[in-house]
Length: 194
Image (cartoon, rainbow, N blue to C red; front, top):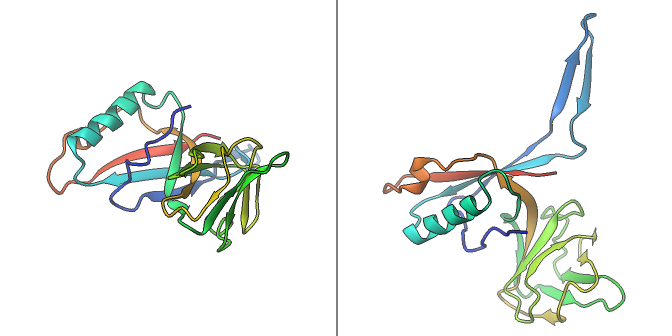
Protein backbone atom coordinates (compact mmCIF):
# COMPACT_ATOMS: atom_id res chain seq x y z
CA UNK A 1 0.00 0.00 0.00
CA UNK A 2 1.27 3.47 -0.84
CA UNK A 3 2.36 6.00 1.80
CA UNK A 4 2.29 9.80 1.65
CA UNK A 5 5.92 10.99 1.76
CA UNK A 6 6.63 12.49 5.19
CA UNK A 7 8.86 15.07 3.48
CA UNK A 8 5.77 16.61 1.83
CA UNK A 9 4.87 18.59 4.94
CA UNK A 10 2.31 21.36 4.42
CA UNK A 11 3.85 24.77 5.14
CA UNK A 12 0.52 25.99 6.48
CA UNK A 13 -1.28 24.09 9.19
CA UNK A 14 -3.42 21.45 7.51
CA UNK A 15 -7.14 21.95 7.98
CA UNK A 16 -8.44 18.87 9.75
CA UNK A 17 -12.20 18.33 9.85
CA UNK A 18 -14.46 15.55 10.98
CA UNK A 19 -17.64 14.53 9.21
CA UNK A 20 -20.62 12.34 10.00
CA UNK A 21 -22.97 11.32 7.21
CA UNK A 22 -26.50 11.49 8.55
CA UNK A 23 -29.23 10.34 6.20
CA UNK A 24 -32.57 12.05 6.75
CA UNK A 25 -35.67 10.38 5.29
CA UNK A 26 -38.94 12.30 5.36
CA UNK A 27 -42.17 10.33 5.25
CA UNK A 28 -45.50 11.44 3.73
CA UNK A 29 -46.80 12.02 7.25
CA UNK A 30 -44.08 14.66 7.75
CA UNK A 31 -42.11 12.61 10.26
CA UNK A 32 -38.37 12.19 9.82
CA UNK A 33 -36.11 9.22 10.29
CA UNK A 34 -32.40 9.84 10.85
CA UNK A 35 -29.62 7.28 10.60
CA UNK A 36 -25.86 7.15 10.24
CA UNK A 37 -24.40 6.08 6.91
CA UNK A 38 -21.18 4.99 8.61
CA UNK A 39 -20.47 4.00 12.22
CA UNK A 40 -17.75 6.50 13.10
CA UNK A 41 -16.71 9.99 12.07
CA UNK A 42 -14.74 10.38 8.85
CA UNK A 43 -11.83 12.81 8.55
CA UNK A 44 -11.12 15.30 5.78
CA UNK A 45 -7.76 17.01 5.29
CA UNK A 46 -7.05 20.17 3.33
CA UNK A 47 -3.29 20.47 2.98
CA UNK A 48 -2.08 23.97 2.15
CA UNK A 49 1.31 24.54 0.60
CA UNK A 50 3.32 27.67 -0.19
CA UNK A 51 6.48 28.02 -2.25
CA UNK A 52 6.81 24.40 -3.35
CA UNK A 53 9.83 23.58 -5.43
CA UNK A 54 9.32 22.12 -8.88
CA UNK A 55 10.86 18.86 -7.61
CA UNK A 56 8.27 18.47 -4.84
CA UNK A 57 5.39 19.40 -7.14
CA UNK A 58 6.60 16.78 -9.60
CA UNK A 59 6.89 14.16 -6.83
CA UNK A 60 3.34 14.80 -5.62
CA UNK A 61 2.04 14.78 -9.20
CA UNK A 62 3.75 11.41 -9.91
CA UNK A 63 2.27 10.03 -6.65
CA UNK A 64 -1.19 11.35 -7.65
CA UNK A 65 -0.92 9.88 -11.16
CA UNK A 66 0.35 6.55 -9.81
CA UNK A 67 -2.81 6.28 -7.68
CA UNK A 68 -5.07 7.28 -10.62
CA UNK A 69 -6.24 10.35 -8.73
CA UNK A 70 -9.04 9.50 -6.33
CA UNK A 71 -9.12 5.83 -7.40
CA UNK A 72 -6.52 4.27 -5.09
CA UNK A 73 -6.22 4.74 -1.32
CA UNK A 74 -3.03 5.39 0.64
CA UNK A 75 -1.79 6.03 4.19
CA UNK A 76 -1.56 9.68 5.23
CA UNK A 77 0.40 10.65 8.39
CA UNK A 78 -1.41 13.58 9.98
CA UNK A 79 1.31 16.12 10.73
CA UNK A 80 -0.93 17.70 13.38
CA UNK A 81 -1.14 14.44 15.37
CA UNK A 82 2.36 13.23 16.10
CA UNK A 83 4.62 12.43 19.02
CA UNK A 84 8.35 12.85 18.55
CA UNK A 85 11.68 12.38 20.23
CA UNK A 86 13.35 10.75 23.18
CA UNK A 87 10.07 10.39 25.08
CA UNK A 88 9.30 7.33 22.89
CA UNK A 89 10.52 3.79 23.56
CA UNK A 90 9.82 1.00 21.08
CA UNK A 91 9.51 -2.41 22.76
CA UNK A 92 9.64 -5.77 20.99
CA UNK A 93 7.02 -7.87 22.76
CA UNK A 94 8.28 -11.36 21.94
CA UNK A 95 5.17 -13.56 22.04
CA UNK A 96 3.01 -10.56 23.00
CA UNK A 97 2.29 -7.44 21.01
CA UNK A 98 5.01 -4.94 20.17
CA UNK A 99 4.48 -1.47 21.61
CA UNK A 100 5.61 2.13 21.77
CA UNK A 101 5.70 3.66 25.24
CA UNK A 102 5.30 7.45 25.59
CA UNK A 103 6.84 8.68 28.84
CA UNK A 104 4.51 11.71 28.73
CA UNK A 105 1.33 9.61 28.19
CA UNK A 106 0.15 11.50 25.10
CA UNK A 107 -1.37 8.80 22.86
CA UNK A 108 -5.04 9.34 23.74
CA UNK A 109 -4.70 13.16 23.89
CA UNK A 110 -3.24 13.17 20.36
CA UNK A 111 -6.16 11.10 19.01
CA UNK A 112 -4.49 7.72 18.41
CA UNK A 113 -7.04 4.87 18.47
CA UNK A 114 -7.61 1.34 17.14
CA UNK A 115 -9.55 2.59 14.09
CA UNK A 116 -6.37 4.24 12.78
CA UNK A 117 -2.74 3.37 12.04
CA UNK A 118 0.64 4.54 13.29
CA UNK A 119 3.43 5.65 10.96
CA UNK A 120 6.91 5.43 12.45
CA UNK A 121 9.87 7.32 10.98
CA UNK A 122 13.35 8.24 12.13
CA UNK A 123 14.06 4.84 13.67
CA UNK A 124 17.71 3.87 13.95
CA UNK A 125 16.85 0.18 14.35
CA UNK A 126 14.82 -0.46 11.19
CA UNK A 127 11.38 0.03 12.76
CA UNK A 128 10.09 2.54 10.19
CA UNK A 129 6.77 1.78 8.52
CA UNK A 130 2.99 1.96 8.83
CA UNK A 131 1.31 -0.40 11.28
CA UNK A 132 -2.22 -1.16 12.48
CA UNK A 133 -2.98 -0.21 16.08
CA UNK A 134 -4.24 -3.09 18.24
CA UNK A 135 -4.63 -1.24 21.58
CA UNK A 136 -4.09 2.25 23.01
CA UNK A 137 -3.75 3.57 26.54
CA UNK A 138 -2.44 6.99 27.61
CA UNK A 139 1.13 5.66 27.88
CA UNK A 140 1.23 2.63 25.53
CA UNK A 141 0.35 2.08 21.89
CA UNK A 142 0.34 -1.60 20.84
CA UNK A 143 0.88 -3.00 17.35
CA UNK A 144 0.83 -6.63 16.09
CA UNK A 145 3.63 -8.96 17.16
CA UNK A 146 6.62 -8.86 14.83
CA UNK A 147 6.14 -5.24 13.72
CA UNK A 148 9.41 -3.98 15.24
CA UNK A 149 12.84 -5.17 14.17
CA UNK A 150 14.42 -4.24 17.53
CA UNK A 151 13.79 -2.45 20.81
CA UNK A 152 15.02 1.16 20.83
CA UNK A 153 14.79 4.31 22.92
CA UNK A 154 16.35 7.74 23.23
CA UNK A 155 16.22 8.46 19.48
CA UNK A 156 15.71 12.19 18.89
CA UNK A 157 14.39 11.75 15.32
CA UNK A 158 11.92 8.97 16.20
CA UNK A 159 8.41 10.14 15.25
CA UNK A 160 5.03 8.42 15.51
CA UNK A 161 2.27 9.90 13.35
CA UNK A 162 -1.44 9.21 13.75
CA UNK A 163 -2.12 7.79 10.28
CA UNK A 164 -5.31 7.63 8.24
CA UNK A 165 -6.28 5.46 5.28
CA UNK A 166 -7.19 8.13 2.71
CA UNK A 167 -7.59 8.96 -0.95
CA UNK A 168 -7.45 12.16 -2.95
CA UNK A 169 -10.86 13.82 -2.97
CA UNK A 170 -10.62 14.85 -6.63
CA UNK A 171 -9.45 13.24 -9.86
CA UNK A 172 -7.55 16.35 -10.94
CA UNK A 173 -4.99 18.83 -9.67
CA UNK A 174 -5.83 22.49 -9.80
CA UNK A 175 -3.58 24.47 -12.15
CA UNK A 176 -2.65 26.81 -9.31
CA UNK A 177 -1.21 23.81 -7.46
CA UNK A 178 0.84 22.56 -10.38
CA UNK A 179 2.01 25.94 -11.66
CA UNK A 180 3.26 28.00 -8.76
CA UNK A 181 2.88 31.76 -8.52
CA UNK A 182 4.84 33.64 -5.89
CA UNK A 183 2.85 34.05 -2.70
CA UNK A 184 -0.04 31.89 -3.89
CA UNK A 185 -1.32 29.14 -1.60
CA UNK A 186 -1.99 25.75 -3.13
CA UNK A 187 -4.02 23.01 -1.49
CA UNK A 188 -4.75 19.31 -1.81
CA UNK A 189 -7.83 17.72 -0.28
CA UNK A 190 -7.81 14.19 1.12
CA UNK A 191 -10.75 12.18 2.48
CA UNK A 192 -10.54 9.24 4.87
CA UNK A 193 -11.72 5.87 3.58
CA UNK A 194 -13.62 3.87 6.19
